[in-house]
Length: 236
Ligand code: 5RP
Image 1 (cartoon, rainbow, N blue to C red):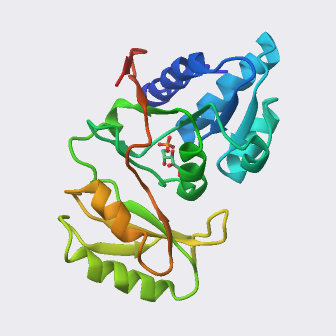
Image 2: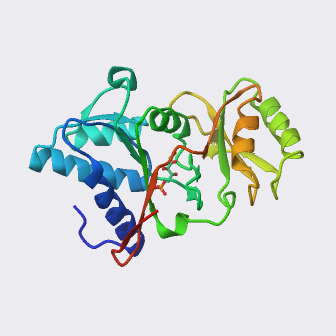
């Protein structure tokens, strides 16, 4: 499954491999999205196929659903599962309090719903994702297409009154067209540089008309499994 991996892929792989140790027979597992989460789905698939592990997975994107089926994991919807034992997902940044920025891969809405409906959320990440303060990675905010420019203007106005360094807001593109999420929405990327109060910003953003959800995960993650290029794994 691994072949000759680059240090960054090795870091993602070893984090994913360690995280699947938390998965037990019979669990309902939230399956994250992104390149690190894809390693986790492949590792889980191997356990299902070769060790007979019995789990049901709730994917957080159509991409993850396809991969999960491909590797042999039984896929169910969140409404079928009702509640999850565990979610394993990647992140774009995490800080010392295990708050996260997610949504670089555009799946933040389903990811947040699934993680919130889980007894435990484990984040898997390479060491470069650890930061002192969130915000160097642009914060994704999912907005409905109707009036998205108005939503952007309202976000820009709101940013004046919160503790951030930068205030640029850009529409995520996919070639010549706005990026479209699995829910048919767009994503605004907020270039904030440094976020002073993640909890406050997360709450204020979600009060703006047109905003569906933001990529700040505050008090949701329980453990971060950090992989290093030399194969070491550290838990936070
Ligand atoms: C997708 C996400 C991903 O988990 C995040 O972007 C990290 O991705 P990767 O593991 O590819 O670096 O939030 O919406």
